[in-house]
Length: 320
Image 1 (cartoon, rainbow, N blue to C red):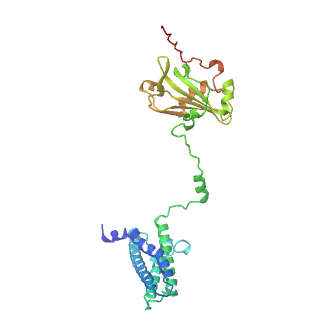
Image 2: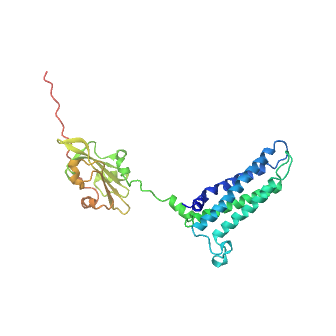
Image 3: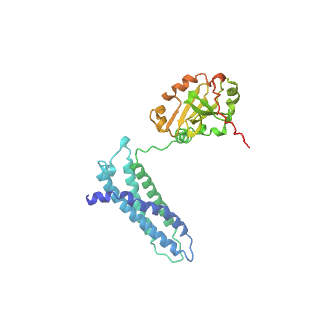
């Protein structure tokens, strides 16, 4: 890589030094205004910051010129070229402000190096020139940022607020409300066997909005949530393996919305899920058409509900 191109790539590094000095110098200048004993360290600090800032600005201007030349951003005619509508371009303003900061830097160094007694302050002239120089450096840095990112749109307040209040789908990964079925009202105390749901043992849970309608076999009102957890059958009794989780929610307008969630599908049962090891179907998913067919009118009628309870074992009699 040619040395000129290498130095041009360092422009972003050099601009940090004058900007840092521009932020710190006004503080030191204000502290150096008070005359009296112990003030000399403050105006020595002012000289140090001014020299660091001016030398950094010289390096930034030189590398900035080479950067513009290497990237073909230097317009024909240089700093005197006219932009659209006979107005200077942003690049020209950036360069002009940077050159003005160099001129102000010479004046601030001259003012800070005036001969003074150890007890004298830095003076109002140094304070005024220091603020002007710092302002020019910061404006040049800001215009350089706009040049560096010309296509970055400024965020609008309305768009930012709209983004902040954008609703988040909390159930995109798992049906959180349905998984919390234990907080709902159980419709029977122990599982019953349901042939219609894969010959599994089921237990139904309903929120308060739909409790009375479910018990009476009536149409569920809007806002009702019905969840059915299942257990796989094991020798005619509820086993230890969890089955799928079913849920039905009545949306506004009375339309039911179904959810089918199976966190871990056993290999022997994956024929029911088209080979998937984990299933989460909801809303308008094509795999829920059978649910919509059976429950087009809501919950099953009372006479169709399963009453197949867990077989009771007879207690052994004592033969004493």
